Image 1 (cartoon, rainbow over the protein chains, first blue to last red):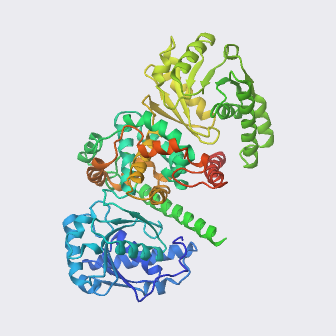
Image 2 (image 1 turned 60 degrees about the vertical axis):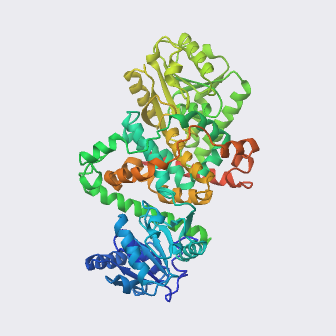
Image 3 (image 1 turned 90 degrees about the horizontal axis):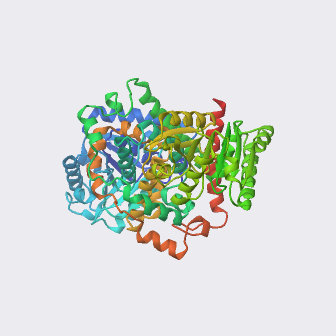
Length: 326
Length: 308
């Protein structure tokens, strides 16, 4: 079940997987499959990115080992990872290619086209995109039935859930095989039956973001107070219960009542609110510029957030491992 | 300080308990003796649980219990108290008539608070002659466990009363957040926005109920307690946020009422955990287990607050 079962390697080193784009997500995805036992080729145009990828994977595996989530020595996992800047060579005899470059339609289509030309027609080409419709990527290849979405969450080695998105032409076989790869890699695949913007997670997140932004823009509450509510009242629940489980626990009759009272006043903007557009024009982009809704000029805060997040995720994985061991 | 809580239903008893816990005298008022008896039992159970969980000592629990009394006589109970919290069912006329009455029967200094979750605080306040001392204190369920309380500012609510109420709530170990009077305030609107999209996707078979819940729990569940929504936005980058909003907003559900899919379930009697079936099947005992997990989360928060 859990990806914490790192000691149960369900991958076979004779099954090869290639990851195109070895930045933050690509290297994490490579780490996931390599840890599960598959042979991985990391591909990137930039050799420096490939070098960094290996370093980062190595240090991430150290952390996993220290946390008791790795049963195999990291050297043997690393031995299953090769790197190359040569895309045709890197994908030539793999069963699955995962594209994880930056979110740019033309760049992705180009990768898909080149992967299409260098792989067998049975090779699955999966994209880690969350913003671009699978159908658009599929249009760049000769066999669109083998194109599918496989959206991992950051950090890929710590979050088990992965969205598997069906494009209009994606075959049932492709979906099933992708789900199988992911399960064998210790992931929890969540199939998205329709190629909708945002798939599952981003759609739902943005439905909340839309409402939260409206509340702040209209002075209903401050960003800090909205976050106090989310952190302590909403977030605590959402760790244990998804929205539909929550509805069941609250009582569907109650949910229906509240829906009939509140839906009509929820925000339904079809474009980003003025507040966000204004902040972007003013260069207040958040952590990366030192200021957004919060002040991040003390750089340590950003690092701390990442550390806290990963420690928290590791704790969850360990709890799951303990629960399934007992 | 003397507090009266009106309404011994789902929220009233727990609210009374939160005041008594920090040394205030609390009177639970209800027209129904049976409801009062049940309410006091609930408080008793809550306090026993707190002792077991190490949040209160046995002696603190006993002292708390002794500070709460009950009464069926509204006018007499409110005549010289500092704060009244109304927690009767969500019926505007009922609430307005109560507010008009308690204003007449209490002193000019008494703060008049409503625990309403879906009605307009401003509307309720309009039943009084001096709406500046009417304020919302929207507790979340269960009130003795969840620290967040939305302090709702009606159109006429005075800043002094808001400051006073915030201070009282902090003293009770609560985390008050100031919100203006819009339907659903903040918490319920956010939950609603979340559920609206989740139910839209499930009812249109974009993904299964399990797939939707798994993604939300795993992708955002662990993040939200650490960053909230705006902290997350700052991490993602507002330029990225704007671009993704452009792509995603237009197709998000914007229904203005509960969909057929939901109504059908209600008509069939599939109300969720309480009837054994809703979006999921709930075999005997499964809901209890989940509620206990949830309770534990809130207990952990209370305990670490106690330590700091």
